[in-house]
Length: 208
Image (cartoon, rainbow, N blue to C red; front, side, top):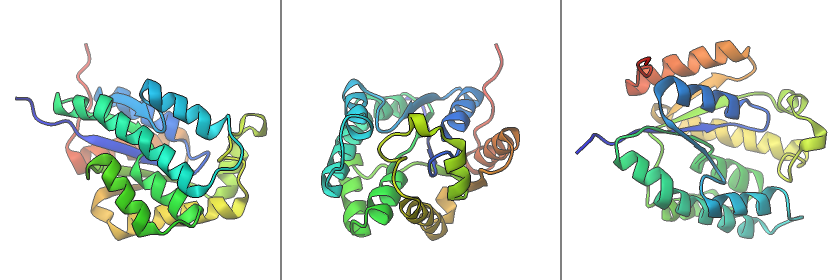
């Protein structure tokens, strides 16, 4: 039986550079790349519903839709890849739910944590990579014409989300790699790659 793969989750607020850096790391280590919400046909449909096709949602309804997508994602894609010995890099996972629906929306944090554990069967990332950027910088990096429902939230919401990510990272530093996302893209990538190698022992995929 192959060794289990490792699950690496990229976390952070809007405009932090997660999509760019998660793609770069997945290529660097030869991992499967996916995202949340999304990653499966059901997940992608729920992503459109959550981000593009609805107005305001009750926070608990929003939470349940996100967790439905995650449960399917674990069962159909992430879990089988890890079991086959492949590393998986995911753009957002449980910490985003805690930060956005817990700290941001104001749902009770421990209730959200228990709901997340139910959706994942208790599976946590082997490493969370937090790309931390000040909220004004993240907003400046985005195009207002392409903002989704979450990105259009007021600055105070995004400040709560940022504080939530930092609180979660401070509470379990052994499971987090915090990187200054305001640095140049190449610098951020170098810190991420070296941090993943140091924490998990995952080296670059051999060329050829």
